[in-house]
Image (cartoon, rainbow, N blue to C red; front, side, top):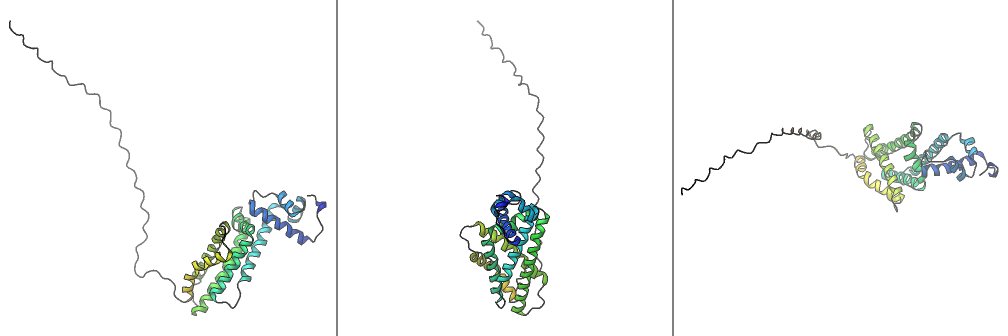
Length: 257
């Protein structure tokens, strides 16, 4: 479509249209297979105009990552309403996360699949988003645990590890839900709550799981596979044994006439 056919509109609005089209194409085709011609066609603009606004394919992809990362983190933060119980806050945050990823599948594929596999520049953008979400979840868990059993000394490393595990599980479950027909955002959030809350609930009541007391045997290293014994050398082929020499039978006695 030629540039002369585009309608005049504010630059910011036009740019968002381009980003919408780019997220759709990048999400469906991946970074390498995405075509700037297809993006321009979907946005209803000329390809030179896309380059004029966003410089290059790399810059366009980076702009998509940043916009969608910001939208996801804002959705999660907005979903957690203050004043709720600990499980209510976690539940509302998970529902917000899964609702957003379900409504924006191309954006989720851009963030969780394509951006991580096409160079450090793109992966760093996603890592920054993930760190922000992990930090937010860490705050939620720490605050909820302190409120539940008044423990101001909950190990920081333990809380951080729980937050990492929870975010990682949510990412994997979002992939699964997106690929599984009939799974709703509410069902995905409930699945993760049932998986995580049993442990988190006990932790927040001051009843963390502990390993058994007393010495424990060290985990055994897997036994090295037995090295096969070298195959025995082929026995030297023995020289053929000559057949036993059978003495000739004695001549029959001649009968006297």
